[in-house]
Length: 599
Image (cartoon, rainbow, N blue to C red):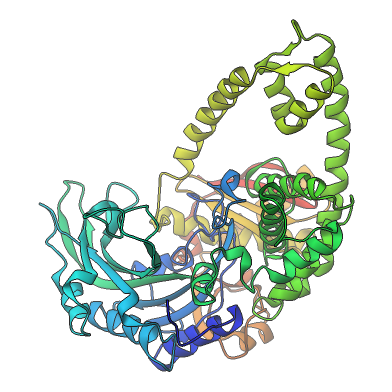
């Protein structure tokens, strides 16, 4: 393929934002990796998550057009990481229209950014596109087709595909949804047959961008009604696009990973390029997992390793990285040196990483030390299991018990068993593991059953109660308390916050009374839009690692709380009812968790 540009990741980020800024978009910063008020996901998994309220009609303080680079984490494919393409952390470039422009403008700008010599300068002959084919419920998307054709795209470069490929949402039974149009590059590989298309998995076509057009609202009876506010939601994966522009076969060969892998090379004494496939896989796992861990710990709502929720995912990533670092020969206790390379690479676009560097290094060092203790405990348990093995075979249930209860990797069990001339019943282990996965997925289906965050009236009330709760905690416990995570459903709120010890019952009662006092006072909840610097000067609580001049929403309950927030909120504290704290517990090291309801 021929390209006019061979960009670095820094250049692509800057170019994308500059392009859409030139089209009247406000540049907004990346939101936290911890979703604000969305119980359906553990992490921000797409650019749309932080913008859901505005896609549903709330006014964004930056206007009707915004563009951003959103940090994201997807953990469904952790075990796949190690090949040439899978990553847990990634950045999504996006541009958004909240009821402003629609298909024609979005496609015109996509074409300009992709093909213009001033921007990416991709050879138009290498580009292919897909549009929604239509069905009994929704017509074929001819508007997108004609928009691409207006730029001279040949008919045989446009494919019409069904819902599986070119339809977005709704995540539940009802809600906003619509067709999308996707952009692909011809990799130069031969077609897999006469019906070869971007729907194939043969590798000829590589998707780099998609434009989603939210234009329908699916009703409970299954019909589709046109939305009053039609939105555009786009996404371009930075890692994948950079790999294409730099002519690399793998995201791990781009400038994004170069300094991270270089740090692992120096520590291991091995060379990535000349390594065998097993060592290459280990390099990729270490590089990906440490990068993701750095962003999790360094996030403005910083996560710490634990055995639940986000902390569990972080612990799993770090321990997998530690294990594969050992396979490369990286000395124990040195993984944080790889983390410093990640911080160095991303410090400019994500200043929170540099600001939280000490915390990042400390948490990684502590988790590495914990894992070594876990391995020692697992070794002792393994010796017991090996001693009672029958017919020279460790049964699958015992092998899984080592893995599940002691965190002892199955690879360790296999290696140690081989040294002792013992076999492991891997079929039994696989069955036990599959049963465990089924149970996990059953729980996950409930967590991930939703899509767009709940913006119901009850949720709005709980959101306001969350602000009052945090204000009460600061008032009675410490001025330094900050929210570390929030999960709100229609039934209850859950807040994580930094605090070094258990909150005593009398202290919880004080906080509870504080919130109910504010409710009894029937105070109108005020919302103002103002520059970030002004919000800081006026004492609003929030994250201030953005550039000067960004406009934010500040919600105030006069006399009680003032917070930067995207909403939604109650109109008056009197609407909340009675606030009751149900539980206080540890969430992770140095982080406490409170669950509360409105009765």
